[in-house]
Amino acid sequence: MPFTSDSARRGSRVPGGGVPAALSPRQRVRMTQALTLALVTALLIVPLPHAALAPASAEASLEDLRENAENAAEALETATDEYVERQGELEAAQEDLVETLHELQQIEIDLGEMREPLAQLASTMYQQPEAGVLGILATGDLDEDLQTQSYAAKLSEDNQALIQDATDLREEQVGLASEAQELQTFTQLEQAELAAQVEELRAQSEASTNELTDELESRGLDPETYMAAADCDPSAASAADGYPNGLLPQEALCALYDGHFLRADAAKAFLELNMKYVEEYGENICITSSYRDLPNQHRVYGEVAPGFAAVPGTSNHGLGQAIDLGCGIQNFRSDRWNWMERNGADHGWIHPAWAKSSPFEPWHWEFEG
Image (cartoon, rainbow, N blue to C red; front, top):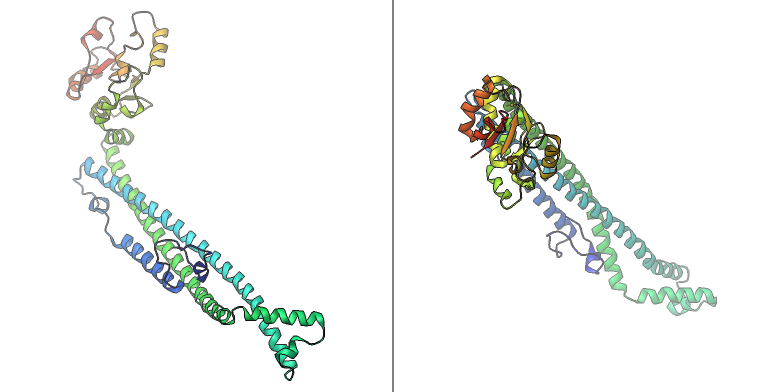
């Protein structure tokens, strides 16, 4: 929080933060330190979600491991954001403190100039104690007389207020110097504690992610594909409603792998089917074509003989509900083709009847939901 000095009461500074302007600078710093300490204490002692910290048991499911990894990542992100935010606030407080001290320095210079007449007058009276005030004001030297009169006039403007301002400023300056040192120490301590908390959460996040990755790999599953399936929300498919073939919005699609996309519901089902396939064959299903936007439909239509590609704007690929497969699946009645036919329907993926004859496309599969 920013600091304020007596200059705020003179109209040169507006108090910042939520600290009342009526508090003294020392009180404002104390309140700032108390609020900051409360924040750090809360961050350090509030327990993280159980799933983020509890190690997965040997019998833990992939869903449990994924939830652990996601919770740990969220906790790390929250702590990191908090660290960055607090760092910015502390830097702002330090800058405001420096500005305040500079202002106090300038005011001290101004007060020094205001005290000069008093010092000069006192010196003159000391040198000429018998002359009195009138004698001092008329020494016979015009330049000296005018200077001495200006000192006296300046001194008479508000002598009591001047003395009080000087006293108050000196007390404030001494207090701020001490508080500045305290704030510096407190700031360094808080930053160290927050940095340690972030590092601890980073280690937890890394450990839980590695645990999930190791388990996936031990089962022969591709971590990237598994996470793609976990992150895909099938309800996002509704965002495609009303959009033309080949012009689906990006938010209606989910990524598969190797740069391929499908409508969200079709993608979710395919990725779950692919996990079964990986367990069986030790590799992802080979994809040769998935969602085709309108420009790609025109490209494919122009590259093949008439009748071997759908007219642009009519292809199921443009709806994000069709996919072409390889790595043996493209061979009709092969072992892998048969596997797809046996398992695909459980996830809404079928080989349409037309693709068995006209035209013959054993590689083409469609999502029926």
